[in-house]
Amino acid sequence: MAQFDPRRQPMRIAPHALTAVAAISVALLAGRVYQPAKAEEAPPLTAAEIASLEAQAFAAGGMPAGLTLPEAIPVQIRRGETFEQAVRRTGIAAEEASAVAATLANAMDVSSMRAGQRFETAISKPRNGRGDARLIGLTLRTGPASQVTVSRSFDGALRLRALEEKVTHETVVLNGKVEGSLSRTARREGAPAGIARTAGRLFSHKFDMDRDVRSNDEFTYVFDRTVTENGRTIGSGELLYAELKGVVFYRFKPEGAREAQYFDATGKNTRSAFMRTPLERGFRVSSSFGFRRHPIAGYRKMHQGIDFAAGMGTPVIAPADGVVVEARRWGGYGNWLRIRHSNGLESGYGHLSRYGSGIRAGQRVRQGQVVAYVGSTGASTGPHLHYEIWRGGQRINPAGVRTQEGTVLAGADLAAFRAEKARIDRIIAAGGQRRVQAPTMAGGLRPARAAGAAAPAAAEA
Image (cartoon, rainbow, N blue to C red):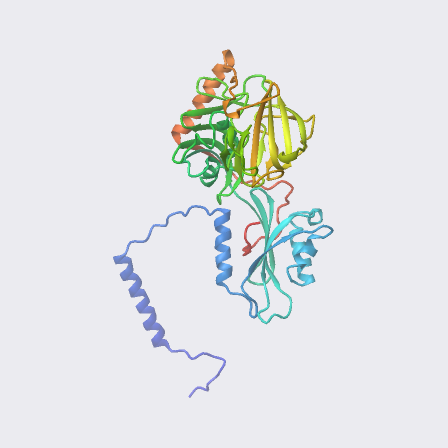
């Protein structure tokens, strides 16, 4: 009888033979019954999808024993602080912060970071509350559509990756119905703040935004914007077209003009010399021009202006180009502002909380410029704007002011305007247009030497 050797596995021929025969039989039967599956080429993954899959894989792999799940901690570099010192404030050890800085230095100049620079970290802390935390990931945005990430791989090493998102340039056709104020509705529907402000100023030439614009009034805006593949807006262009209650504006720059202007469908400049109201949004007329019972004195008195009830700090804009005559305290008017305009009119503003940047006597202002902010200074029962119009030293009803509108395009300018109008009309008919820009390496960013799984749990900075 052969001696048993523990270093050798016993060999039993029969079971192996039976297993092999069974496997061959199943394979032959499968080959007869089933046709081989045809492999279909999968579409390439985007940078965002790769990062998401890596994050899921990292989470599925579990955390090292004794540590909590990663927590997103935003960090901002303080004055006189280095990047490494800022990272240390998350609770990780000094050696680890130094390693993170060294890893990130493979892609960018860490020493050039200044106070105010923001980044996101994902930190795991000891479950027992004792000891240093551990950095799991770090995300730093290097441009509107680019970022670098430092993350810890399954073997504990730090890995660096530079990501650049695809960027899409869109011309958006935004349709909506007014619910509340026009400006707030446009913002809710996706219009950038600048676009909503520009449209509000345009319509202020034609409408009393408090009385003339009602709920369910339909509007259309056309504007350019740039978005990343994650749907984040990183830039917005100009308002190309705006329509409300049958009034339309097309953006066009005539030959030799300093800036673009807005025209109606016939090529007439729709900008009036004087806007209907000095507020763009969030107001109502609380007291009209004429006799009324004074809210403080209690007797009937001539009210020589219009009161607009609005929230404290609401911007007040110049209704026309002009020169500041007064910006001072004036009795019951509180903080008072008066502007002289070129058409022989003067506008006055009372109860202001403060003045706009650079507003003082002798300062020139442009139509639509923010010149002050709504307040409740002087003899006032609450935040509102007292608005007056003067002609020849006498106050007149602001609601009755009518001024001449702009000129009409002609010749080559009219032909060019019609071509631009046709282009915008085609975009509206098509519901907008898109142009995708392929990702490129961010400016000033060196290619990363170490590549690997980059799955920080931190949110976008």
